[in-house]
Length: 298
Picture 1 (tube, rainbow, N blue to C red):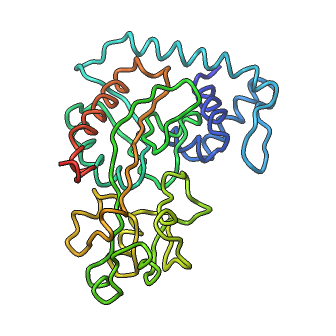
Picture 2 (cartoon, rainbow, N blue to C red; picture 1 turned 60 degrees about the vertical axis):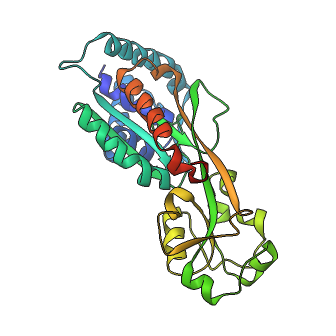
């Protein structure tokens, strides 16, 4: 039996959709489909039931899954026991992280890590949505909520500050804001409520429930650009907005928030050299960037 077929089976079982499994494997979704069809033909039985929401394991698939997981664990054990030629960690690690933190903070640091270890590759998934370890969408996930279920290792990476910001020209032509009630005279920019991937990003209602939003977006980068264009006020990370001279904090003593980045990985991966290297490196980055993440604590 072809181990590659089983590897594709395992990823589809975890991801539930061809597209997600293909992203994890770095191939086209049609390749995943062909591999699964070939395996089902070899075994003479369907392993997945095709449904509108994705692929669900059949009874035969559920029986096969533990054996394939055991094969994967054995392969990982061999990998841990085999020294890498040239020394240093090697292979691919996928890091899932929130958009702003991944783009502005982590990208430059991870580039340095790959220079340090030429045989190590990083996929940086900086997305405005939650990535799931259980679906193998990433190897290490940095999220705003601490994972509460599953066999995972979790650590607090860093706290970061957010404030209410406006463009200076916008603030000069609109009514002065000296208290929360004054916010009723202003336009707001925020997230799309029904697409918000975590309650940790709900800010505006804690300040002043607006009657309308000038613009809403799933992307914090888009919100930042809208504030820069003078479209209204928004709660933004300090590490994103403080560096911009055309933006100013609004109600700096009241409109301030603190959130936490949590880092997690599957417990089964903790002995892999590449995972250990990236995990330790990211922890160092969290400490090194502390002043930038929470500038008020300098």
